[in-house]
Length: 175
Image (cartoon, rainbow, N blue to C red; front, side):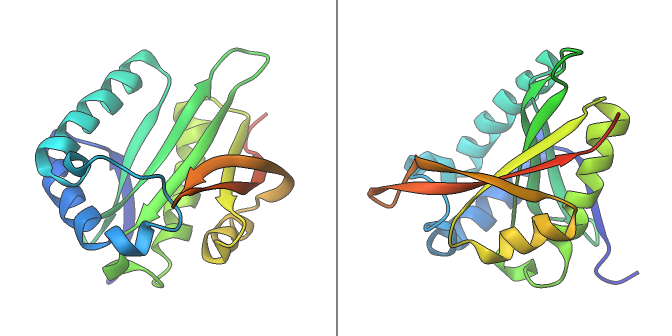
């Protein structure tokens, strides 16, 4: 099937394709993400980052995934800040898709797939996310996956030299 979308747990071998996407898309992602050190955009920097993510996975605080299209890494989808306690059971969702694969439905399908991981594998009850107020494409992805906005976090992230507000999103995923 053409343009198939899958997700899987990140692997050390994903460092090179992730670094290549992040280097190429530096300017495209700049309005939405905080500044990163130069080595973030290298295979070595991504390998170190993947090691930290997998350590978090083993500790139960993060589920770090990659998004695949036709078996090629085209982005990431991550559940972070996992709180598995019986009275909380929630996680925060983040994702990005490389510019070469955008506007093909991959982000929406990847979010739908990771919502299943959140319930079936992680046993979570609530999914949360945040978007920059101006990031309308990401907001559409969340809406299409059943998320609702529930508030604004004022001056919550430092981007491109300024403190920015974020729109907060929620969805109940399990019971």
